Image (tube, rainbow, N blue to C red):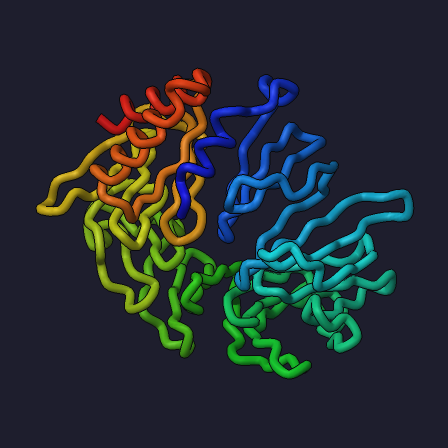
Length: 338
């Protein structure tokens, strides 16, 4: 992660966006400055790619970016590689693209079709009364379908070689979501169960008595002060961090909590804390964006604190003579890192 290129853009926010702007960061390293109607989209090197009124900006697990723009006749999806080559264009108000590359199309007759965005002709019908569709990694997805007598059933599936393969039917499920490793959590009436990618149960708790929430790509918090004690792994259901509250846990042990505090692990049980930050956004494997005293910052939580400081100091030495605005920005960052 080239932090210097992020900092140079974040330090020079266009004046037209000062009062209404909001930064969004995406898992492929791209980011945008958004004011509610108009966005400037940058690549991971800080180069402006497009500026337009986007209805949606979505990054895919292969690093591509899918952009949806409204035009006179409806909406158009365009998909670009990280090298900015267009690979697909889809015109429809009824199409929805997911981060795993799968797409949905709903007809006026309430029939739902699924396909890969690169091959819209190879679509498969999921039938009628499809109420919810949830995407997962590696072409996994799940959907709820209405049955007779106001009943419904969830199906966990994989889209492969132009076919929908049903893997599991969690009876009496009310909702579910996937983790990035293929595990998934299913909410039943009062009970939540976590299954691994092989559909084996690895965890369960009564959510009426226990706080249960996803807090990372492969982590969830389950806490009630008694049996359930903190953050658990969605790989094997084992406890990895004993805490009562946490909003996000990185794989490297960095924690963001409900006290607006980001904590970096320094080793030997010691931690460095960023206090009073807000608008926190994790992105990619280890990227963290946050606001502090009206300054937008990005750090790589995989980097040792000393290396982060040195990067900022080296940039300040280069900027101090010819870019005072950037120098002020870096000075604030260095103070935050001390």
